[in-house]
Length: 93
Image (cartoon, rainbow, N blue to C red; front, side):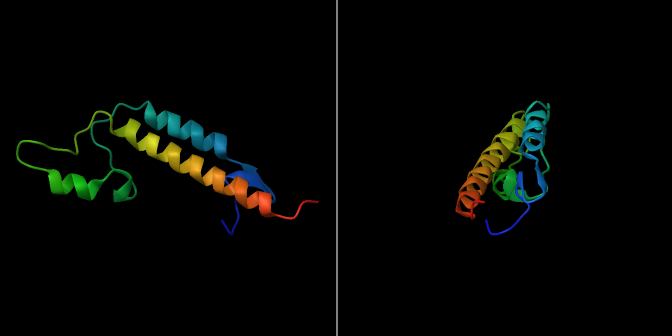
């Protein structure tokens, strides 16, 4: 990873992974029909725009928050795995 802070703590930074997981769980439990994320790739906004027609609106998705949270959970898991690997390379002692 090459830099701090780690989400999983270390070098004077607290472990924030549980807080991230809690927030992801809250988002997963939200009832939403349209998700507007900070980055268009998080919700396939450009793909949805390309698929939009007069009859179908792909932006309306009752599972949108659950899908966003699932992606965020996978990203967090991947980041935490990279952190574990990075920390394993650090000198012990």
